[in-house]
Image (cartoon, rainbow, N blue to C red; front, side, top):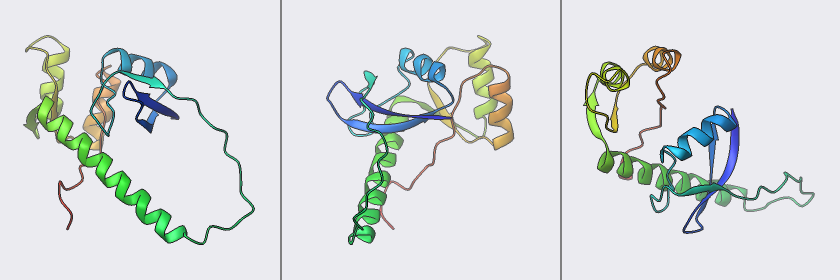
Length: 141
């Protein structure tokens, strides 16, 4: 796995993990990488700063953690909205429907649904690209 700092054409910056640099290139080319802030799919790698340790202690650590958690939840909600607006829900038939699309048995389209870890791994073994994403509630508890 590799992490890249990314930015969209609207200059929103975010981070994402990929299986490899080649996987990133394929997903960007297929317009499958989207900005969690605005939903734009014109993504490039941003300049990455090296990790540098600080000597000064952060007294606002809990505040920083809470802000990061809120940012994460908002980004995941944005991703959820984008997926729901731009994909067909296929429920527990995800693996079966992904195979039908991959092998040309049905029209190509974006889908989402549920798959077990084993089903997702089997799809990847067949060369069918899919990703498991955390499905956060669309509202606060």
